Image 1 (cartoon, rainbow, N blue to C red):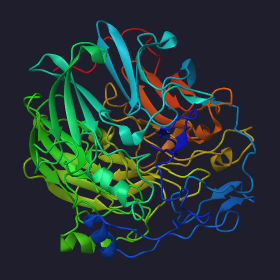
Image 2: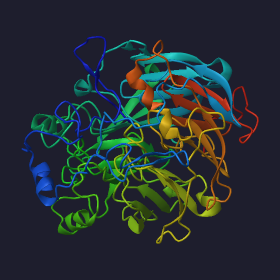
Image 3: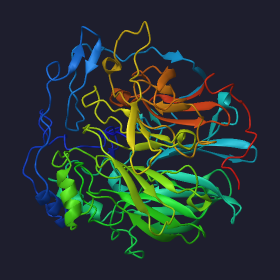
Image 4: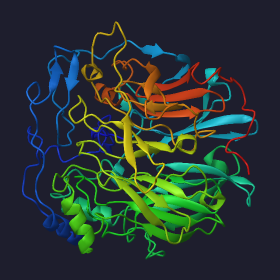
Length: 585
C-alpha cells in the first residue's frame, strides 16, 4: 500500500494519501534527504540509531544515473534511491495520463467506479443465503458488494469515504483512529457452525509520522497508540457488520496480555492472518518494542511471526513467537546480523515481515513447511510441525533493491505440484525512481536450501502503444501481490495472476515455474480529472482477487473495480457458485 498526505475538502483532518508517508516531506529538501537536526528521545529508537551506520542513498540524477535507453527503447533503473513522494520525471515519459486500455486474453465483464479508495484494498468473498459477497476495505472504508452476478454487482454496505474528483466524501485523520481494522481472514469454523472473521489491528502505516529521527512526539504517539495492537474475532451471522458478534479481542503483546490500549507494545497484527478455521493461526507481528531493527523512516518495528491456538475462537491462546537474526535490539547476535546486512544505515528499507507465514494447508491437517518474506532480511522457510517450537530451516538473500519493499508477498499456489513458490517486493516510488522489483520463482524442493530458479518476465507494452516501456506510462510500475490464500480454490495450477500497478493485471504461465512467461493482461486506462484528483492517478492497479471457482478476476484500480474473465481460466460462471465459500469441513 502506498500513500501521500493530503488535506481533503479544506477539512482539518489529514487524509491518508499515497506512498506511506516518508521522510521526504515538508522538512525535506529537493535532494530527497531529510533536513533538520536529529531529535531522538525514545530509548529503543536511540539504541537503534547508535547501533547502525548513517548511509542513506544519494538521490540519482534522471537521464544520467537512470532513464530511457533510446537505442533499445527500454528503461534503465537506478541502483538505489530514497523513499520520496516527489519522484523526478525523466526524458521520454508521456506528458499525459494514458487514456487507452490494453488487453490480451482478458475481457471486461463489469466495471464499478468509486467502490474502494484510490490507495489500497483488501479483498475477500463470502457466500450467504445463495449469494456471493465481495468485501473490499482498508482502514478508512468498508464496502460490501453482492457479486452473485458479476455483470450487475451492487453495493449493499458502505462505510467510510467515497472518492470523486474533489477527493473523499469524509475527512480521515489517521492519528485519531480508534477502532478500524486492517486485513481480515474469513473461515468456516466447524465447532461454531459459522463463518468466523479475524480482523488485524496494527499501528497505522500512513499519515502518522514522516521521519522517526526528527519527530519524537510522533514516535511517542505510536508507542502509546490509541487503538488495539492485536486482533479481534467476530462470528458472522450474516454478510454485513450489523450481524456480526465480537467474541474475542487479543493483543499481540503476549508478554502483557492484559495491557490496555495505549500501553500495548509492538506493532499489532499486520495484514491478514493465515487461518483456515481450525486450530492454528499465524500472524505477522512484532510483540514488543525491542523488535526495532528497521530502516524504514516512518515505522518503528521489525515484525516477526506468531502462532496462536484457535481451537476455541472465543478464547485464542498464544503459542509461540518466531523471529530471525537481525530483528531485535539487546541481542548481540541479532544486532551483528543486522549491521552485516548491506541495507543497514540506508534509512529506507523495510526490515521484517508484512504478511504471516504461509502454507498450503493447515498445520493441524499436516501442514509443515511454511514460507515467509522478511523484507530486506530475506526469504525464509520454516518447519512448523511442532507449533510450540517452530524451527527456521532455510534462508535466501538477494542484492538490495530499495526504495520499495523487498520479499513482501509469497505465493504458494504451485508448491504442492512443483516444489516452487514465488515471492516479490513492490514499488513505493513513482516514475520508476527505484530498482525494478522482480518476482522470484524460488525452488524450495529442499526447503533448507531455497534457490532463485528464475525471475518472472518484465511486462512490456503491447504493439501500438505510445510508449515502449511501462516506466514511460507514469505512476508506479512493478508487481504488488497475487491475491492470497483467501481466494476460492486457492489458485489455478499453471497460472499466477498479479496486480502490477500501471501495467494493470498480468497473468503468468507458470506450468514450468522455472520458465515463467506472460500469457495475458488487462491494463486499464488512467482516470480523468472529472473522476479523481490527479494526485491519486499514479497508484493505478493496486490489488487483485480471483474467484478461481467461478473464473472471475477482480482488479482493483484507482478509478474503480473491474470484473474480468479470461479463457486462460475458462468460461466465467455468472451466477451463484456451486460450492459454498469459505469451504466447510
